[in-house]
Length: 334
Image (cartoon, rainbow, N blue to C red; front, side, top):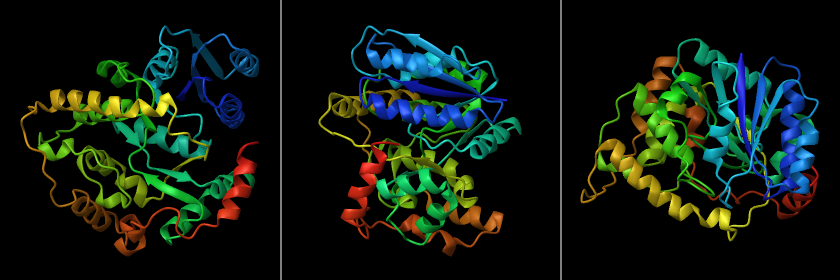
C-alpha cells in the first residue's frame, strides 16, 4: 500500500495545477493508493475550487493550512502532507508528474522488497511530448525516441528527480524536508543527500560540492552525480517518470529564490559532510562513467543502447517551432 504525497500552492498557475491534480486523482481511483495533498490555503477562489474538487474523493486526503510566509514552500507542504499519510510507504510527487499507476506500483514494490528508497529519473517533456503522452498515453514510445536521440518530445532528463519512494519511518528519522527553502529548488537535493547518507557511506570529498547543471546525464558532476548513481538501475530498466510541460517565467519571485536556496544548500551540505569552507572545490573524472558500465555488465545490458545519456546537444535542436506552438495551446487546456 502506498501514500502519494503532493504539495499544492495555487499562487501560481492555479487552473493548470488543478487540472494536473485531477488527472492524478482520477488515475488513482483504479488503485488502492492514498493521495495526500499538502495545501497552502490562501483563502482564494482557487483554493475553494480545490476543496470542491477533492470533497467526494474517498482515496484523497486534503491537508490545508494557511502559512505565515508568502512564498511557496514545497518543503513545508510535503511535511504537512506526510503527517496525514496512512501507509508505511510514501511516494513524493509533484502535480506536473504524469500519473502512471503501474510505475508507482513498481516503486512501492522496490521499497516493500527491502530497498531503503527508490529514486526515479524523470523525462521533462516538450509541449509536443506532453500532448502526445496525454492524448495517446504511450510513454514507452517517448522513452525509446529519447534513446534514439529524438529531442522533439523531451527537453531533458532529470537524473535524479524529486520522485522518491521510501519508508515513512525513514522520512521521520531524517526530520523531513528542511523548511528553510522557499520558492524553487534545492529542498529536494537537501533531502535526497541526507537520505542516501543515512543508508550508504558518502565520501566527504570537495567534488561533491560542485553545483553545475548538465546536458549529458552521465557527465554530471558534484552532488548531482552522487544522486544520479542511485538512478542507474531504473534507467537500465527504462523506468522513467514524465514531467508534463508548463509555461515558466524565470523572473517570478518563485524562481528568483533559487540562487538563495543554492547558498543554503551549500552550507547544509558542508555541515553534513563536515567539509570546511576553505577547502578548494575541484572537478575530476566524471563520476558516473564507471558505475554505469559496471551496472551494464552486471545486469547484461549493452552500453551502446544507452549512449543517448552522453548526448549533450541543446534541447531545442531538431524541434519544430510550429509544432511546439500548437502543442502549447493544447497544454493550456490539459
